[in-house]
Image 1: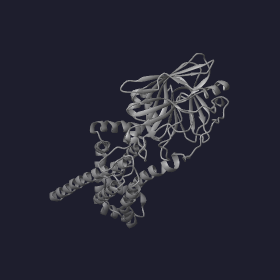
Image 2: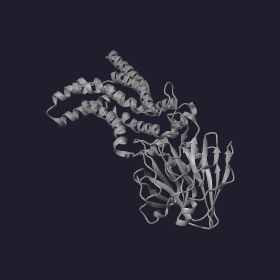
Image 3: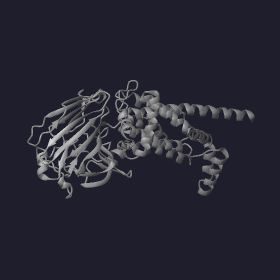
Image 4: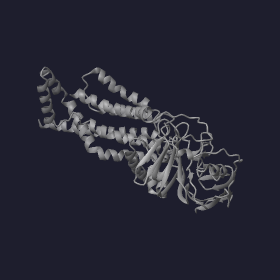
Length: 509
């Protein structure tokens, strides 16, 4: 029975790590194809979406207006589109030290309008817009620009108000009603990898979400949408409206989702381009928090982030916030952990009696089970007590893992020698510390192996986990290392308490 208990503990630990490492790599996330060339005409599969066409423009596309804010710079091109959105903050800089550009070369661009009428659409892509301002410098107040395109029978105006936080409001006005499609733009193509989801998200007025991963898109129209967003790991470009919208999804040549909103009259939208900061999105509208998705387990990860964010606002450091989170989790789980550790200590003390019972009733499984359970009951030992606290930690550990993958807030977060908690420790100090603390805790934990091979495997686990965790986000390794340190302190305390009880019992005898 004790061997079974130890096997369960080992398996639970191993499975938790294998689950994190393998599930994301090989099951959940699609293989990402890169180096896509831009097509002049979007291919679609339904009659409705065939109307969303991109005409070849004979215009020389220039920048006609600039909007400069503290944290970003926007460029408006000759067709009235946002052709560039550059983040000025150094934490987002590329590896070459350049400011980050969020608008990819692929079409459509944000604010791009396509008309259902072929002739009108052709004219729209070959008529230069006029702007009432060529340069806007944002301070602390929003400012607007009016973009006008005279298409003969149709005069199109976009009144765009830019805010310092990346939000922009757009009001589309037409002198006559015609069917058109306006896009929030192709999703940012900055943070793309096999570990995270990227593509499009559409939220309906009833709260339901339609998440379309790159490579999975099919042509369709979704009515009653309030959020239409393209996103990668860290960044998004989106439209939002409390009034239901008709969202159109078109697959590109790689079946990645391309988004539009269809209308035929004046339209007001809230737009946003930038990092998926939870606080910023929430300040625009709480509905937008859903744009931050963490893959499988989003509900748990999001609530865990809110707790971690609260601790960060107290400590002003994400590394310290992670340490405080570990302490909080250990306090909550202390009663169960304490009982589990005490049970394991008692099982070690009962090992001689357990072995005696096993020898006596080895040919009678029923009596063996009965006497073993009687022994556990008499001494208050639980063979599964050590497993439960570990199993309860798995979803928390997984949630932290997801947070570090998706939360832009933790990107570039410093802690001691670590420059970015969302990346691996460049000096491998934390993984080594984690392995050492795991080994120390292992030595302090009462065990009584009957199988020498099982004992060797158990002792080798710290080395295995050190190697596995070496390339994981440093914040995750920090969480596990601090957890090990607290486990060591708790185990030392329990060992002393149990030894004291043993001495008192002997003295009484």
